[in-house]
Image (cartoon, rainbow, N blue to C red; front, top):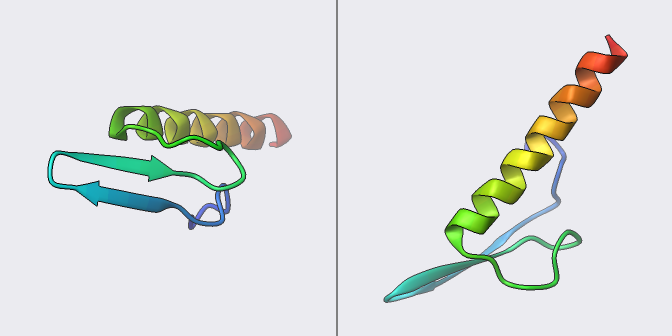
Length: 54
């Protein structure tokens, strides 16, 4: 959120699992692993864009 890549996120916490929701990026709930990979790709794409500008 500090990088400005996503406006917010929601975590649904249940006794046996967590589900993540990233508004404006994905209409479905994500597992922790899926959310991590999605955010990692966003950060990598932002970094590669920033490098190409420099």
